[in-house]
Length: 390
Image (cartoon, rainbow, N blue to C red; front, side, top):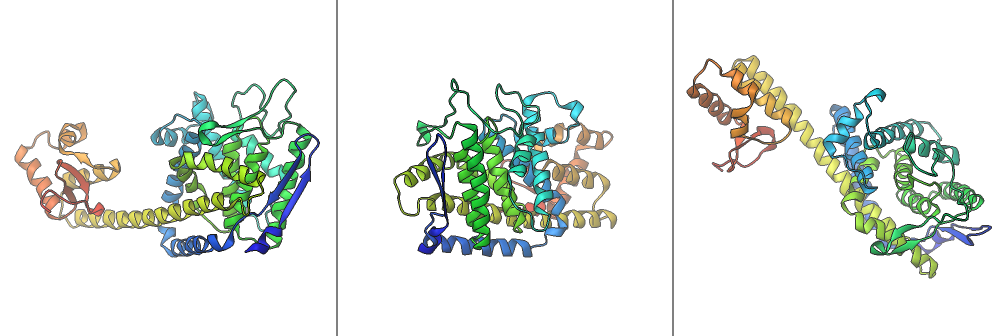
């Protein structure tokens, strides 16, 4: 609605010139998306989350840390990220592992803050998140939690021509601090005027990146701040899952920072609409994907219980139970040839014939516990993968 755009804060800086925080969104254009995200979130919250909360939380954290690190050039795979998060401090050997662990620590700060009744965004928290994100990471100028103040010989620029242009954020330390204080003040005004969190969170993310207050880690910190605000308003899991959406749409993500900024510079009406709409699209995709994942995890739990029952009732033997357990643990289809080569599989049949091997697998397929596709890969039955016989 047009009235929303009265929520502006213009700050005069010493060297950067005027900087305006504005709502700058076309609410009628966003209302349908807002309703869809809200509806998806309500359905997600009503799903049986408690039964899979621990596993879902771990998956989301790993995926999110992989995503937000990869956006900034991180090289760890999803599997390597998961392994890094389980390391003790003494086991950390390289910078990539340190970056992953730092983000895990920042997420824990976020969760503690968001759980506090009446929590409000402030500069101390922003510094705390930055300190966690950049702890023990080498950088010529960056110091964890210390705001940027460029000496005359060094100019900070962000962006690229490929993504819509190169931007020169404030360079002078007092301007940086003044604008960061302005962001916190402006956000609180939006809170008091009940601007929806699904609009506030991406706008804080946007303006934080335009201020670019630290020497290093700004992208990661901006995404963590967005997630914190969403978590504090009851959005669980999706705020962190959003990082994976940004990675998968990285060109649009980076470009929108520049196109949104240029629209504001040209006094275009509602310049922030596209950025918020992109965020809402991501939330809708992320929440729906999480809902699907919960359903899949519940199906897996029911399947595991059924397999255990069949084993307890001796409908399947110990060898068959071991085969199914190993395939479930793999978390992906296992080719028949790889299965036959596996040492654990060979050990099961060391004194048995090939006919017994075939009979065991046939029995599992007939019960629907394993399914075999056209490529001779075996899937756990709960995945409902089409078989070669379908």
